[in-house]
Structure formats: C-alpha cells, structure tokens
Image (tube, rainbow, N blue to C red):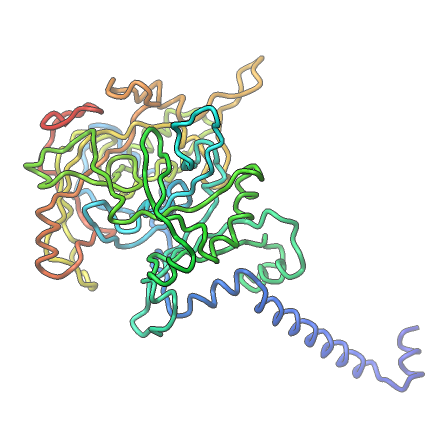
Length: 468
C-alpha cells in the first residue's frame, strides 16, 4: 500500500528512505544541539576543558575480594607491606575519590574531608544548638551515592578560566530525583551512549574562592555542628552553581522541603586542635590539627583485616566491601589486625617513580584504633542500610556488619559507645613535612609504596600523651 502511494506520487522507495534518513539526522542534530546547550552534564563537562581529573583510571581495589588477601592473624608473609589503594573523601560522608598519589599535609591528605553538607537545625527547643548541623550517612545513607571528582588545572591552561583561577574544582554528581524529560534523557545518552542511562545532576564547586567572587556571592564564615563540637566553614550555598543544584540534592537525599541545605568549606583559619588520642610532641613535633575529619587526619586499614571480619558475617552479608570503612590508606601483605600493634611507621617510596616528590619517607604516628559507628552498615553501592536475614518471628534483621563487629571486635573499653573497632588513626610527623618543604617538593604518598614499622605497642582509645 505504501509503495503504491509513493509510486503514485512519483517518489521511489530509495528516495523516500533517503528523505527519512535525512529528516531523522536533522531532528537528532537539533536534539543533540539542544541537549548540549541545555544539558546539565554536558555544560559541566564543557566547563572542565582546561582541567584534568586526578582520579585513578582504574580501581586498585577491583580485586579486593580475592582469596590472596585472606591472611589470618599470625600468618607468615613474604615481602614488605605495601599500599594497595589511596582514597580521598572531599565531601564528608559522600562518595570517595580513588587516586594513585596523594599529597600529605599536617591536616592529612590534601582535599580530604574539606567540605561538609549541613542542614538547618530545626530543634527549636534547644536554643544552644548551632543554626546548622552536618549530615552524614548515619541518617542519610543516600549520601554514599553522591559521586565526587577532583579536577585541577592542566599545564597548558587558559588563565582567564574561572575554574583555573580557583585552582581547580570539585564536581559532585547524583541521580536526578525528578521525572526525566527528553532533554535530560538525551543529555544522559550524550554522556554515556546508553539509551537507558539514568539522568544525572552535576555541579561544580570551586576549590578556592577569589575575593571578588566571595564578595559577590556573600560567602560568609559560619558555625555548624559536627557531632558534639562546633566547626566553622565558608558557606558555599550562595555560589551560583551550588545554589542551582541544592534543591535537587535536597530531594535526592529526602530532606524535608522546609529545611535548608548548604555546603561548607574548611579553611586554614577554621582548623582546630585535636583534643583526644594525642600523639607525643616528641614524635609529631607540633599539636595535631584537623578540619572536618573525626579528630585524626589519616585513617589506615588492612585488606586482610576486612577479610577476617567478613568471614565472621552471616553468609548473606558476605563478601563485605572494604570501602564501607572509608580509609585513606589500604595496605596488603600484612596479617589481619597487624596494624593494631603499630605506634609509628614510615612510608618508603617505591622504586621507579617518574613523578616528582620529596626525597624523604613520610613518617606517621599511630594514635588509636578507629571506633566504628553505624556508617559501615551502609551499602555504598546501593545507599541503604544492610541487615542479616531476620530470625523466625522477627520483622527486621540485625544491622551488619556492626552486630558482628560488636560481638567480635569489641577488643578494648576506651570508647563505651563504639560499635567495635577496625582500622587505625594516624598523625603525620612534622620532621618529614619540614624536609619536604625545605626541598621545595610535595610530600607525596603513592600506590605501591612500602610500609616500614618503626615502633610497636598497645593502644587504648581516649588515652592521651605518652599513653596514646
């Protein structure tokens, strides 16, 4: 029937197909053009043209479940302990960034926990409470699905680029909580070439605020609560790119419509001294300081320790993703829980390094075990709390892995509220930082570096001074 109609009009089937293809190409071109102009993800990527992503190309933890990392306590091992992976967590409690090298500073790795999301405090009956309070996966498990990327200027750069002037930027991404439109679907397709990809919201957060931008957007220094202490930070909620994304981020995190959300940035002036689990000044040189980390600047953990705990979990909760524990440094080739005997260690640079770094081995003091909270119960791939299978007659299962940690890893009494212990807190020592500064080079730590233990001893959470 269609062929007869075309013939009656004097149009061949080949010509008709050609017209159809040309029309389709024209419509798709128009659609792609609109998506490129209006698409959130495309506009974000276009703004990064003078920057480079510092994240690892592929994950060093992709084989984390292999049995080669099953090293029970007391296992004899050959060769040195090594750094398997390095992680930064730029926004406290949001998704991490895996890197191949990281710059060590007095306050930990650069860019780690330098931002924090906070909501308006609605506890009207508590007049002493801060106006703002940080949020974490303890109450907002979907924060684990907020992805982060770190972008820094390229060698050949455009000095007029505002992201270059800000020394780079952080990119935050999350699934669009609103009903998809054809523009958002096309934008997602342009970025992934997957017609079924979920549209994302992405926005740029400058790493540093120039004075003219701070004045224009009224980026004020404000106080907000983190656990039982008051912290301070620059309120980035007025920066146009951040302000535009916050309403959608509120909906994604299921924050009530009437409660405000903002993003705080730590500055050198807002650092505070560590007041518990203190390392001796004879080792670290000057008192430890921190920004939005929980007291200590660096967290180190062992893959074999995670395997040992994973083996104790109910079968339905195995294997356990090590990234639940949000360490900065992951080591291998050490028996499980070996790190709990360390008092001091140095990081020996691997051979064959091509990127410049200070010719000094970073030295760190180990101050205490990491007392765990409910956050490891969050499945970082799904943004939900995990439990085991409920017992007969029970509607809910027990939270995991915290239930197992409490039973098997309550190995000290330092923190009465601890849900078990796993991992160690560390403080960089001034001596290696000073040497790196004198050389005019950064004190970098890289994947493949070796761990050399200097001193060993016992630990008790909450102790201070020489009894750390």
